[in-house]
Image (cartoon, rainbow over all chains, first blue to last red; front, side, top):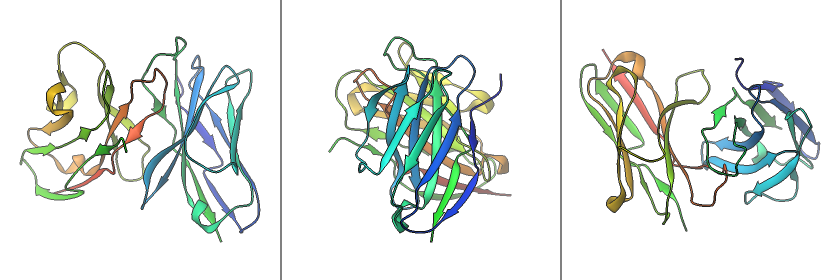
Length: 115
Length: 114
């Protein structure tokens, strides 16, 4: 099976702009989670989607949002970008269909740089 | 605040040495535990996981991790490191909320020299 794919791999934006990142999960996986990785804060959970519904949300401002489509592909959006949003954004998928824990498999990430 | 702790964030050691990376968490109840590895230039990959059963989980190349419930720990052991084990190692905990919300430790940057 193909792994989790994320596009684009690299992005450069300026403050105030918005950005949309895309994630395609492993075939058959219905849960998609997003994480932010920075040198200072490490890996932090953003949100999780299952069956097109946000099931869980981390402690990030409302500028960070996401959605999931019927084919389980997911997008996350960051509006009004700030310098501190520069990070590696990771997507992970799992087959979880019973609201129980499962193993998450990560994509390569999207490196976002905000100037 | 509930958290996952990893110490000795930067480790440098010689090939063939043994290595133990500590992971402690502060969540109560039933948790699921993971070690992920991020090799240079590569994405985060699952190394080991514990859901239930035998608290000693074993992986490839002799990697193993032991869950000690009383100590809230899930330490990773590598019996004989190789240069190819140079990577960042992350401990992660899925808290007892029944969802896919991983809490990660800060990671251990391990460098193995010949």
